[in-house]
Image 1 (cartoon, rainbow, N blue to C red):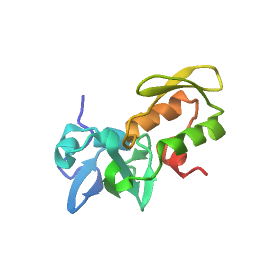
Image 2 (image 1 turned 180 degrees about the horizontal axis):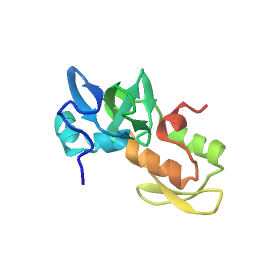
Image 3 (image 1 turned 45 degrees about the horizontal axis):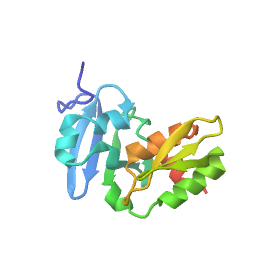
Image 4 (image 1 turned 45 degrees about the vertical axis):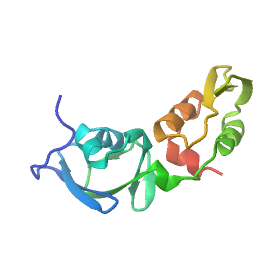
Length: 156
């Protein structure tokens, strides 16, 4: 399997900014943003779990499934800690009720069970702390919504 990017200045230039650090990679072919940040070299540079990284282009959060590399681009990476308070579990529950027609089903010691409009059961954690990007993405899909995290977060 080929690496998703190279450092040999072949392809489209992708400048990645992470805090005070800036590095450049080159993509021979467009890939998803998620595939790029899940590369072990990017993980080594950032030191963060990719599930907790948000990717921005032109100050707009993009989904991990969005294609990048069709043109030279600048990506800014931020961690979930930069987005603290962006959405609470209570807000997630309200959005799931309104946007997906989900309803509370039952609860255990650390999780709640919810039912989507098709009757399928999924869980929501009740632990303290923010939900990671990956977990929120899975919850959105299990709820039956066909959208990424950034659209879910920005929906009113």
